[in-house]
Length: 121
Image 1 (cartoon, rainbow, N blue to C red):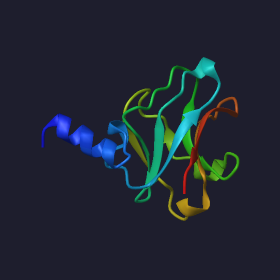
Image 2: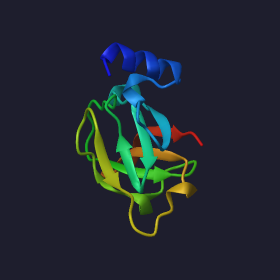
Image 3: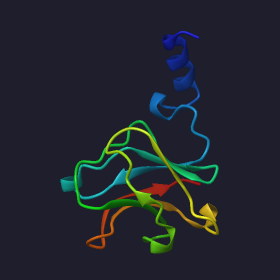
């Protein structure tokens, strides 16, 4: 399939090229402008995926976690692997991702939010 055909098909299906192929619940990051966070998070197949449009400027000790209308420290999945592009994080055993509606980038050192992506259904 040619790139032009792929993009036209994706547009017709309502998918953006950056999100094409996503099969989970998606959300877009928001946060304080000084942290330079943006892009898309996805929960699928027991993992949190930061998609290729993800960007993060700078802040100390950024970690990936889940939340339900607020950050849940029991869901920490470890340090942010990359400040841009795709990365993936395994959801801890015993955590049901269906019970959460947010993906957080959290500064554990200072206990402050850096960004949150509210997930769709």
